[in-house]
Length: 246
Image (tube, rainbow, N blue to C red):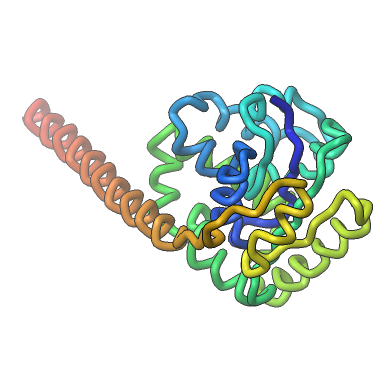
């Protein structure tokens, strides 16, 4: 299996619904959830952390993560769409856009996947767990640093970056190789682009915001548990020291 479709659209542009649609069309797809939730992909986070810590434009053994997939959408693949175009010259490019525009994309991103940067409890996980350190490092450098240029804390700059990015992709990809797509467009443009029949069912409409919010809540609970454990360990150590000194 080889990569045939490269998703260049940022996360929070309907990528989870598009991920489900592509799988339905027979294009097994890669997505951030394949990195952090698919137990069969052990080692993928380490791979993407290496990518994040390599200079932009670097080539890697992409088949290590994409061997079982025909498409990729969402982070982290969208952060290296240029590199993937060079590695898979016959692949087409899918640029997903938020149906309600750049400002709606920004609000959605800040409210969900930006938790690695703006939720202090995640910083606890970075401090206390290998997963937190790896995922935080990868996200910070590859997603928020490289792709988003470090502008997410400034709404106007982030919106401008989103719009400029669209122009960058359009300028770099030939029209016959590119589909600019919103999930509200439905099956038609996507099926025409891929040369596959239209399914007789509604286009997926997945509420990934609710799922991400649950992940964040679980993470916050976990961070509090870890902090409580650290506090208890410190209290026991201090108590033991006082006992020994007494």
